[in-house]
Image 1 (spheres, each protein chain N blue to C red):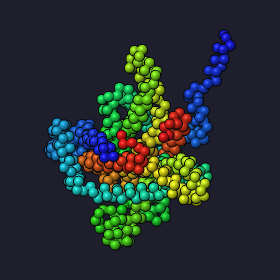
Image 2: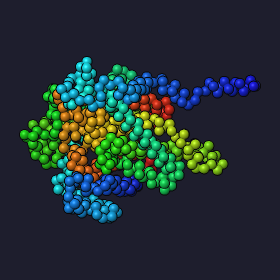
Image 3: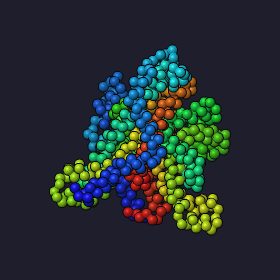
Image 4: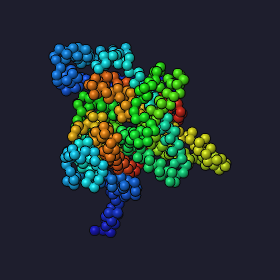
Length: 294
Length: 334
């Protein structure tokens, strides 16, 4: 091997990949690391919560109704004598599952529509963009209520509603990205050599449009968790006896004068999870796509 | 400018049509027989047939839609299944209650948010800056329905300072003229009732103002920091002007443009947040009107309530867009 070739190899090794570079930048932000730590903590809780919970999600001991926090019941008990600490642990799984699934669903649907609109343009773009405009014309919680009014109240339908209301945000983001990317020389070259549209979209445009989706997705999980809790609180999401945090708050509302702890801990859990995703999302944005800040 | 406004209004037509179609679908897209869903499993065939006829569900969907549009254009928002009243005649008091709450919340958010943002930028990296921005982060991350419950627990139940819910004292009801109770009580010279109305506004107002306050504070801070680095601010300071004057007279004027946009957008968002706040505080606004209709499966009210809020939301956004171009002449009208 020539000396020049070996130098090139060393140089290539020294240049970090874009993800490594992003991680290096992400690591510099203490707030982002704090957010990551909170999110990791709640993800672990979501996985192992049911295993470490001292009581079952719906174990009722009526003689233990509305007990304040104690050594036995760290977060106290609710009106049916259920252990709130255990229910908060179970609730992490529900809230995070709804948050992740709704955002994944909306990111997939939004990316698909955004790519089609941005790449093909013309009437397809006009129709898809007008649909996005119409969806964005509703305050998001109202659109979610409209969807749940049609489908009926349940956790699954709340998830679908949250996914639907977030589609235009992802769609518009991807569309604008695709409009930019499709002017790039490598896309023009791919077209010139006769590459099929489907291959250009799948192999070139999609991977290059993913950065803003990842950033927006992280921030959207925070919003989705609050929206799911809001629907649960309004009685349009999770139903009894599911230990969803918003539903727990709605139940606690009836007796919070006598048992304020029943509303304090689910609320803190929602808030901490949302802070975690917001901080992590801000850090990811600064590391991956600082232009999005504007 | 007029050309731009005309273009924006034209652009609005398909959006408004689409909105009416989405709202129209709320009843029609219900899986199964909507009449059965509305009246419940025990409903007789006769009752269901009568409801179908009343809602026009027997016609083809496009006929139903055009009838619905025709009704909307003549101000017919349908009839409530619960109260048997025309929605257009019973909705105003609810809307006025929401407007009063939203405007009060926005005034709180602007005063607190802008000043917190300005002071944070002024004393960048000070303890005030850190505390204010941590509070802002908590503000945007806190579910407002939880904050509402906490407020009730602390200020109503434990301290007894403010009422838990409602808009007036049940024993001394306010005589509604405009349905804006702060105005009505002043018109009638009932200052005691004015104080009562203000007291009822404080807790829901704070809950509703939390997110806009946090967003306005963040936006003002970043906008001020940018402006304060500019040459004319440096010149003003070099001329020996007091920092207070430099900030409030020179810097704020230019930092205000992006802040105003955020304020406008947040005013629209308040309408969405109102449904949660009004539910917690039993505030008789449009959000609670819709929420109660969901409980009674009063679909015409759900439809019209959502349509009215969405319409106001779109109009606010349009006005903000137009104002934005008026305030900042650098923005082109195309």
